[in-house]
Amino acid sequence: MTRFLAVISADGTTIAVESYGTGPAVAIVGGASCDRSAGRELAEALGGLGFTGITYDRRGRGDSGDTRPCAVEREVEDLAAVLAAYPGRAFAHGISSGSAIVLRALEAGVPSLRQAFSSRPTAARKRRCRPAMSPS
Image 1 (cartoon, rainbow, N blue to C red):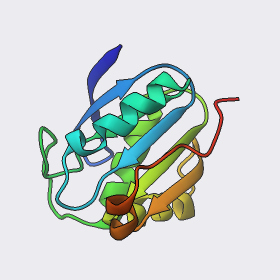
Image 2: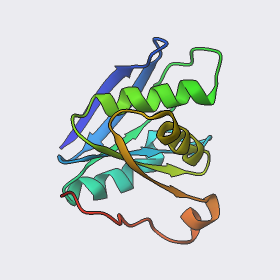
Image 3: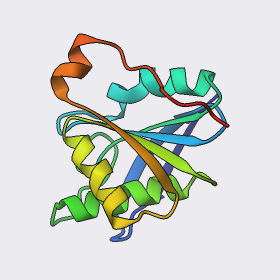
């Protein structure tokens, strides 16, 4: 089942989100030039493996708002708002510049974020991502 929603970040910016499946949340944070469609295939696969696979439009992309100023701290708040929409512990997977957001979110202590995975742009192009965790 696909779920679409809009969450409101700390500064009032609307963030467009879609998710697949049920279970522990795994947010996919795309690169700078990506919208949420870039993470859709992985989110769907995670949904089929007992997770809630989440992909979203980073601020200024796709259907999300673009409140200024743009800063990594605002994008960390956006990720926190996305994860807050899903109860329980959460994971995040950053791709390219999305990795910086995920790592900063861990550093900032985003409440539900428990673990993060990152990939370099070249690694993402050379092979498909496979989850290295189980829902339990």
